[in-house]
Amino acid sequence: MSYRIRPSEHFTAEFKAVGTEQLTLAIAALTDRPQGLPEAIHDARKNFKRLRSLYRLAAADIPAFRRSENTRIRNMARTLSTSRDATALVEVSRYLLDHAENTDERAALKRIGKVLTARCDERAADGNQLEESVAAALSTCGRALDSLSRITFHDGGKKGAKRIAKGWRKALERAVVARQACTDTTDAHLFHELRKRSQDYRFYLDMLQRLWPSAMHAKRIEVTKVVDLLGHHNDLALLASLVDEQPQLFSKSEDVAYLLSAVITRQKILREQALTIAASVFRDDPKAESRKIKLLWQDAV
Image (spheres, rainbow, N blue to C red):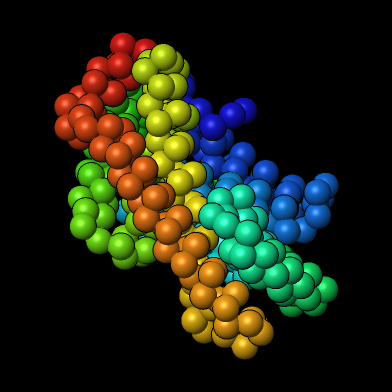
């Protein structure tokens, strides 16, 4: 199985199969940990994001289920975020280092990176609390699987086409609103919202790519750029927040000054690039695009 829904099959079975796969993959990642626990948590959280997007796609038909399961999965992912956030800060410090503008800034960013790496290692060494969070997440995944197994939809080509089209339209409308909200602002929360809505769209392009492979592949390439750019932007915002909340971590005020200057510079560039690409990705009218998806679904059926 893969992250795909086939119009030729019963929607209930396809929906359950995709959701079950994501939960099963998350359980396997958290249990087996082939590349270590931090990477396992990162992989599991990606599965949780795909699962929540799947539930949003059919939200109109399963409102109570979607609300309860969205809360369940979101809260579970948050309990695992502390370790991943520490790793993300190390990674984004290296990203800043790659874009250092001069020798002094590069030296300062290297020292900042060492502090963040030590902080990440220290958190990893305190494994008891993290293992408790993982155990709780595995238990929650089991309950989520049980809840998913009881879901049913009205199957049928026309009903499925209408359901998919509505979910697609809602996703695009939310993305358009998020993009418009980012105009003439530097608010990191608004850009993070645009990233999440772009992720939803990318997941749906994956899920239904067989309906129109060439067009959806091209769209996916574009929207992935938005997601990646705003991922860096969000991590930089987390780094700036850490400096603001825990300045004692960094002994040299000059290093902090170089860091914040680098963050501001890179975020501005990332915002401009992301908004330019997002304007292309979300240029089509949501209603018109969702009608195309409906017709393609019916044709595939």
